[in-house]
Image (cartoon, helix red, strand yellow):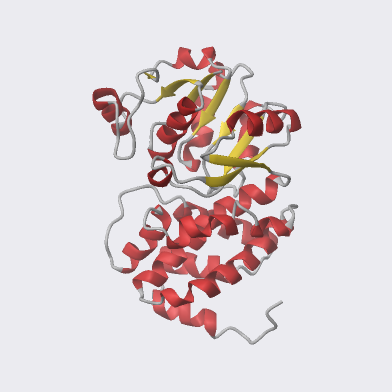
Length: 317
C-alpha cells in the first residue's frame, strides 16, 4: 500500500519507519524550511532512527495525491491550517490522525476539525495510545488504539497496521478516546511538576483523581466515561507520567525549575482548551484548573498543589 506521512518530527518520522517495516511504500512529506526535514534530507536519520533506502522524502505537495492512505503527525494547533493549505491534495484518501490535542480557541477535537474543513463524510481515523519512538525502535512492543466513526476504515486499519511490535485494538468511543488522549498530556505536565517539587509520591493520587476528572469531561461531551480507564488515557500514563522520554512530563519538571523546554509539549495548549470547555459547560476540573493557574496566571506551584489537598472533604466515589 502506498502511504504518505505528513510531518517529519519525532512521531511522524517514527510512523513512516513503522509503516516501512510492515511493507508499506512510504513517502515522508515535510516543508523545506523545517529543521526536521533538513536533517532527514541531508543525513537520512534523526536522533531516534534511520530511514531505509526505500523511503521517499519529499516537499512536493503533488506527491500527496499519489497515496492510498495518509497519516498526519503535526502539532494539534497546526492541523486546521494544514488542512486548509493542502485541501486540494486530499482527494478522498483516508486520513489517519497521529497526534493528541484539542484546538485552543474552540476546544474542538481533531476529528471535528477534519469534518469542518474536509466535510463530515471524509474518511478519517485516529491512531492513539502509549509508546515512544525510543522504545519501539529498540523492539519494545506496546498496545495502541485505532478509532473512527467509519467502521470499515477502522477495521481495515487495525488489520493492516497490527504487527508483533504494535497490537492495535478497535476503539469504540471516538469522543472519549480523543479527549482521553489529549488530557493525558495535561496529567503528564502535572506529574512533571510533582517531580520538580520532589513530590513524586503523589503521582498515584494524581493518576486516580486524573482519571476521575477526565471521565467527567468525557461524559459531559457525550462520550463513555469508562474510556478514561482505557489505553488512550490510563493506559498511556506509564509513558507520560513516569517516562523520561515524555515531553509533557519533562516540560512540567523544567517549568518548576525555571528552565526552558525547547520541544513540543502539547499538554500546555490543551490546558487552555480544557479551560474553554470547562467554562462553557460549568465543569469543576480541579487538576486542569490548578495547572491553568500555574501556567497562565503565575500562581505559585506548591501553593496551588496544596490548595488541591485543602479542598472540602468528600467521598472518593
